[in-house]
Length: 214
Image (cartoon, rainbow, N blue to C red; front, side):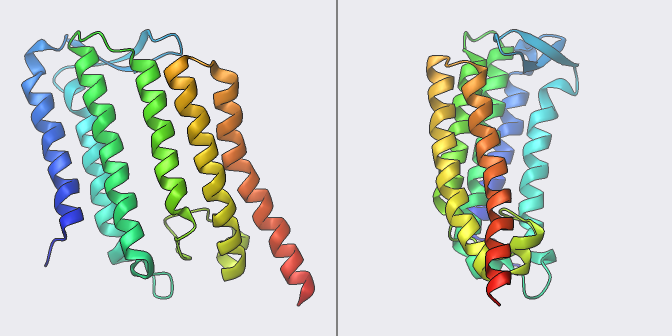
């Protein structure tokens, strides 16, 4: 089976995540911090030996899932129809998880990182990248805004993802600003809610409009 460069890059990031966890293992405390609250204080911990490897395992799981999706997609909903975009999404998600793993490992090892702001800003960048490619995703069961109405109509899928892409980019920009400048929780939650809820409602309204015209 031929392995693409994107798959190799994703697998390489997974290997690097495990190598980094191994290299920092002795510098990490007995209880490794894995979650921080809004004020940047660690409030979730996992004991060694699993603690350092939880996030690398999550990254590996996400990578494996992305490798499996093209092979388990049903006929008529293949991700191969937007293969290039899917590959960008795949490596972006794995890279994001690798970045989070790096930040958490360094913070756990005592490096003075504003972990709460860094992860929030990284999440915003993830949404910006995904939003820029959302309009190029074709109908499938695994990636995108999957509602009963988008899955029922190619036109509804297309229109919803064009709007969703713009909302993801806008929400991502707000989240990046909140992360870098500490804009507070409220604008962050509003941005996430808007990007999540508006496309769903829009897909229903557009479907009703198209269905009513038929």
